Length: 528
Image (cartoon, rainbow, N blue to C red):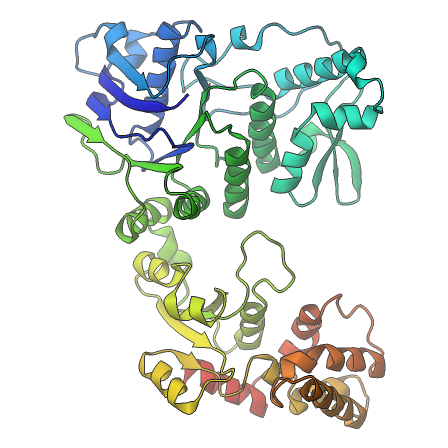
């Protein structure tokens, strides 16, 4: 199902609101705006429509649903919805709505019986109601596994395969959490509950998950279980970002979006940076599939018409201001340096933010009010591709943003042109040229009580081998792996990190300190 138009009169916060021009291609609709702007009221309107038209129980309550100061409207006329398709054969599946009050801290069961029709099961009547679903979904999954044992179609598979076949939550959970794995269901006839593996911990119970883990698990589990029964549906989730940190919010939205069938829609209300930023990225990749509806600064005491909006720079600034408010200026550094390096995007790549991490460690003492952010390659720095620079300058008014790129193969004329535009350019080829400077390697040897001659010889040999492979003579980065291996062997370094990046951060960056020529050269390049 896909919504085409909505008309609401005298309901909750709305005097007369219409939502138009919703495309039939939209799979994700994002309601943005501050708390109290009416986002949850829209979902309440959907719930009332479903109660009247989809036969899932009429929640109408004049004291709750009627806009204060207005006469009680005919409940059949208060909310009107047009769809791009005809209602499904079973209209109960038209809407599936989750309230923002999702909290089930613990549960255990001692017996399992066949559950009833999920579309007839009790649901929240109002968006202000508590929405408990985890234990109910546990019952359904366990019963599904029991039924699967008696299905002859499963005769040739083992129990583990059957469990993974019946429970799509396992793979979905792995895409959201790096180290949280659903391992089992306990004994469903004696304190049954979900069991998990995390790190070195095995089979710990659902109640021991963190608040954020429970929140994400609840939404994923519920959606995956319900998709078996709601396959032509508008799914509405009020504030799916609750209890989640920003990076996890983005990964959760990715997975929710992945799970929604093409013939269904996911509606979410949010004012979180993580959710909005990820939805904005999705809109860039698939403009026809992602819709934003902006509830901010709307006068719902009068007539308002909403239509899809694009997340322009001005609207994104406004959304960030709603999400962060004055908090941004409280934690903002005096200066942000946008530098090269793989940005943190949830990929977990070992080089993510390597340059920024090194700069932070090197300049932590002398420039404590400066922070560094890796934003990609030189083009990403110069063009602010991730739009980090302007967002920071908009929200954190007193913060200055500087751009810093590696020298690489640029000519003097190219460097001069970059500097005229306000961009800073390293005088050496890249950051590794400072980290693996002879002076810094010598300090490392002195610190370990070892003569530096052999390590410096190994460095020269590594660079010569790199040149023989076709690299420039100042390309220290291409030789850094060999230099690291020599340092570990000659200095008998143990627990020195499993990667070149870990080695450089742990052993070299702290030595690139005030008093060394390499530090002074880098300081001049970065700060002038």
